[in-house]
Image: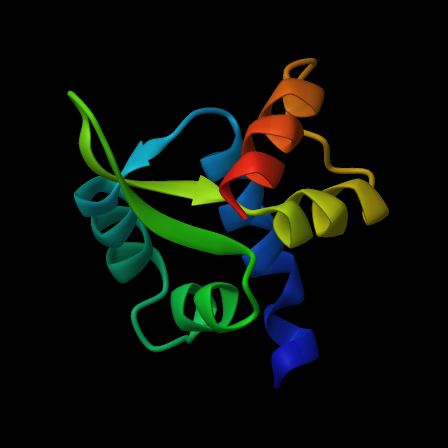
Length: 93
């Protein structure tokens, strides 16, 4: 089943990579779109995403270095800012 979820995990990563997403927004989006699947849990367990406190924004979800690498390996870099976000994620790891 994990391979079956890979496209959905990539969709989640790509969406989260565009900008830090509020944790509540991520939960709303993924609970309503695929509540029976373990997309969120798998991404967290694999170290692709993480929750963190960001001043002025509260708890947000950001893409980790392994998440950026997975996106790149599948040709799914979300935008031209991916390089900046990769460096920020690397500092956070």
